[in-house]
Image (cartoon, rainbow, N blue to C red):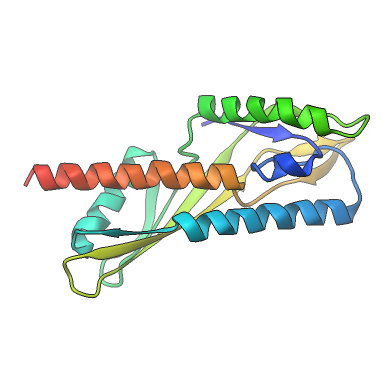
Length: 195
């Protein structure tokens, strides 16, 4: 699946999950990466867990179905301890990624320093969703999800690799949580109504 990232030097854009295409002082790059990571951590803390009125085994089935329905392969699962890992292409549609990128491009171009360039560029992003399920009473469960990514695009300037992120930006992290939680809710609804 092809996704789009915004290529620029602006801090604002990097906080939406984008990369740098021109050489800037190392301190700027480090600060931008740190700000983006911190913003993504805050999204994960706010959106990374959810309580369900379903037993753990039904919730695990729903996570597997949600993974499959979003083209993610379950690569590791342990029902006894409530652990699952699913990997695959980004679950955000390329059209939505492109639209988000283009909306940010308008804002960013107004804030760029003279001589800086910004554009949307296709990338290949693979995500990994790691989930754990806890249950104290066997009737309700809490799922905790972690999302990470490997961006396989290669941003280069004069033949030198400039940036490659192994994490999603805050917007993509939040959108991935929204899509995946919705897929789990849908799978649980179907399970409940087909018994």
